[in-house]
Amino acid sequence: MLEELKEEGIVRKVGGRFRLSTLIQKRLVQLNQGSRPLVDMSTGDKMRVVLQEILQDKIYLDTSNEVKITGEMPESHEEPDLDLNQP
Image (cartoon, rainbow, N blue to C red; front, side, top):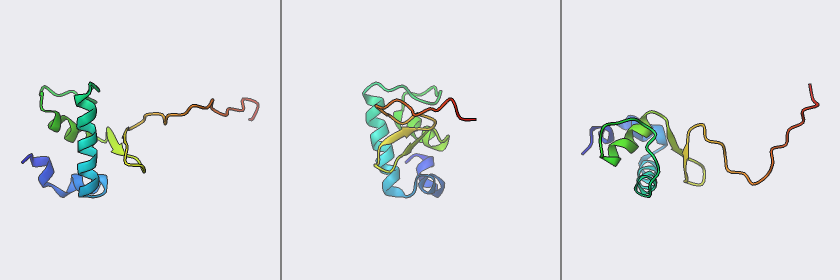
């Protein structure tokens, strides 16, 4: 077993074991489909990459249990409502 999974910190970070396993599974699928890793590691072990992405706060599950990248803009099909005339 990977050492990171033995610690409760990673479980608390994502909100429980179910959310952790969901996040890991969904991110592994993304990586296997060609998504680029968000951490620079010299390993081909995608599980270790995902765990580091979680530990470094690069990814999380949103309220609909979808993987989101920290700092990523939400998908929107509408133009932003900007009023440049306000002070």
